[in-house]
Image: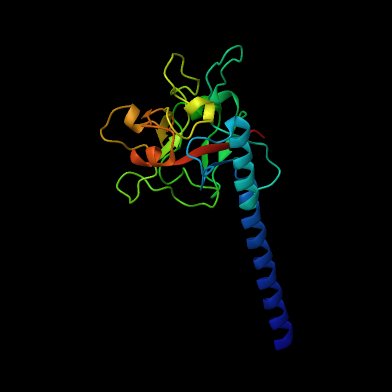
Length: 220
């Protein structure tokens, strides 16, 4: 009788362990949004959009997420006969979930409106919180090159560090992943369009509270 009860108990524990393991794997597979835990190692030179997308994919796979087509949330500007690209057009229809399974937005419209992005939800692919204002060091400046609606920025000023190929002179529009800045203004609280960087090198990006990181979204 005791052996029977022990066997039943062990079977229950084993089943629970399997369910927990499956749940953990499922949460990673279900991740469709993250802030990169690292950049290219060359400041804002990400190797263009293709290079940035490859970084997103590499980090996601290393974290255990499979079956998704990853895209960096980055805009580019028109150069010569090549038109600019809007970040919002690269990321699919949504919804998007972070590494903990929390939905940050149901759609592109919600993402650029009343989304659920903040310091506690804008996590890396590892499920880690990104340092924000008040932390040492501050890393909340996220590369986007975008306007608040997710479109590219027209005009002669460099807002994309040469369409993500420069690591020296230039500038890029960044957002604040923690939705916190120097004041209570709309730009200070913007996740994707807060201010220009001081340059494109890692040191220049670090100087305003950055770490050469960017957002990644799964298109599917």
